[in-house]
Image (cartoon, rainbow over all chains, first blue to last red; front, side, top):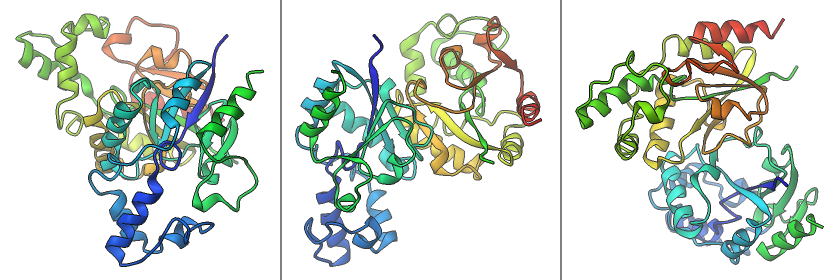
Length: 178
Length: 178
């Protein structure tokens, strides 16, 4: 039987972008944001200096050095047995990030082939059976079943199935096999 | 009414990769391929030294400097009035090409926003109403209506609607509006 497909987001789902972003932003802006202080804020309200934020996201090696989210490697490897995994990352806004994201995936997820990596803008024309993302804007119009991965900016959103970590992702998806 | 969507390939469709590839390949390999001599051959039979080919496609500035296909700019601009255009390029195999493709599009097609650019591997999960591509392998399983743009390697394929140039693309697509 043809495996069902999953679109997996990178930043905030496979890559732990939050701590890095806070650190770079504080350093550049003299602020004292913490993971706790931005809980429940929108990205715009958490990082109010938008140009500064864009500068950070365009910096060389920012994306290349992001830490991997807990349990993500083992979970994807496990899910790959029963699902076809596509990595789908909104990245074309930041050209410097593009090659870095490929190299980051090659390093941490060598079992994901280039054929299954998609660097896009809007995710509106992506058609997979499941989509795992931290951004409601990507999930709201997705063609498959949306799964919202917890991030500071979505903790108050309740209109999608929520998962808090990779162990929960695996449990939710394996449940669909029964 | 919501505009219908078109996925537009880059190499061989928006970008005239053929002449450039032949030139680089001949120079590196001492061969005398011409546009005429490779007509009807598969890519594998036209460019038999696969590692050499991969080296060319991984070279800095190869994709950045490709010429634009005749009438492509004006045609996309016109089509954009009635369709939503997504650029969908298989590119993740060649990380160097990724940022170059964005900059190339910014230069020649500034009216295409980053949100509508997708750099992918397989195009199997792309869901648009139309797909314009020179590779039958991308068109064979596409979810929308396939439109095959003529290239040396597909001249003997007959199982998709063929267009030979951008004027024919516009005619075929405008016809669907009636």
